[in-house]
Image (cartoon, rainbow, N blue to C red):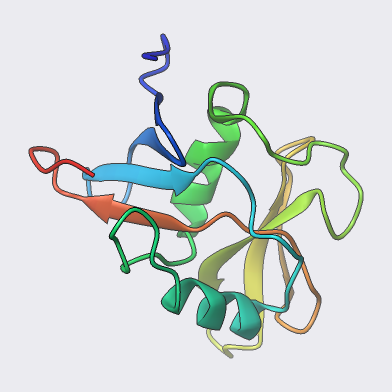
Length: 134
């Protein structure tokens, strides 16, 4: 079902629009990962995913996460409670010391650098060239 925002639901995978980093199609899951996790555990989890024949899942960049926040109503299924840890989402964006990572509230849109050791929700993504399909 095509939404006005450009979000397209295709079963367990949703086209969330275009990645602001690459201009490629940005795909995400229809649901969050089953548990909150520390950053490295989330990275490891996404590396083992094979959904609909695709095994190139990863954490979204800071900008991709913000795109998903802006399209959260059309994508659906995000925890918008604002409660920690479920309502805060992990990105792949690390600071220079590699000890902190960007997280974003899906209630308010607030972003900050949080410890990699604090668990948060996450939604895996993959990015493919515009002409390719899922």
